[in-house]
Length: 97
Image (cartoon, rainbow, N blue to C red; front, top):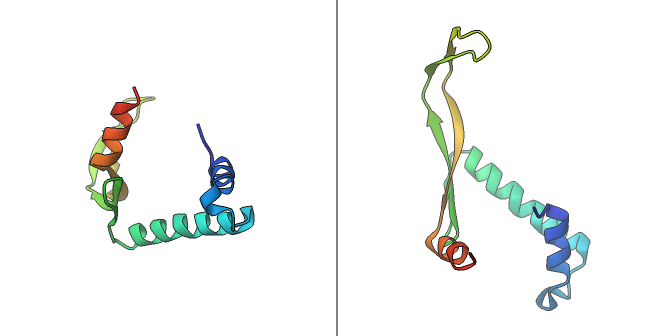
């Protein structure tokens, strides 16, 4: 698994980004993440063509069961995040088997 710090380290070691410090790259990555989260939270769909689409979906209310005792419970409606992987990303993943 790669975490955010490792991604920033990899970006910092890229010769094309030699003019940016790790601090600047961290700010850029944080801004990108926060922008995507805020757009999706407000109901907008974020689409990076060929890579992924992220959108907010409304999951309707439903009944479920408490796994401990089998009691029927009501689960309220809630927003969830839906992510669809783009064709370019799928192709890259399948080529690297």
